[in-house]
Amino acid sequence: MKQRKVPLRKCVASQEMMPKKELIRVVRTPEGEVLIDLTGKKSGRGAYICGKLECFKLAQKNRALDRALKCQVSPEIYAQLARDFASVEEQFLAAKDSEDDE
Image (cartoon, rainbow, N blue to C red; front, side, top):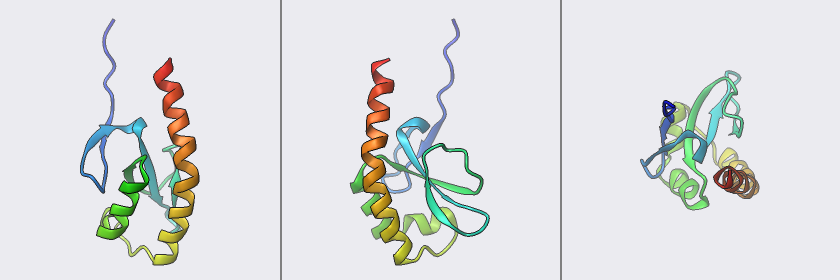
């Protein structure tokens, strides 16, 4: 049986190439809203971050999301994303562990 190609994406913080399923997508919607997209299917410009809080903090420090999303991300949005990221991180890691078990 032929092996399926695994799509790779680069983390904007660590610059590490990883499988798309192991990364969390942050998207800027056409309306200009910046939010976390766990499905990976929302329309808009996307940036990928490792599922670790340290990578998110590094992206915030280096303003990597501003460059990747091609817009100015305000400190209020970073604060909201930090709260969302903390809650999503556990859910994301649990989903990744369940996929690894299969």
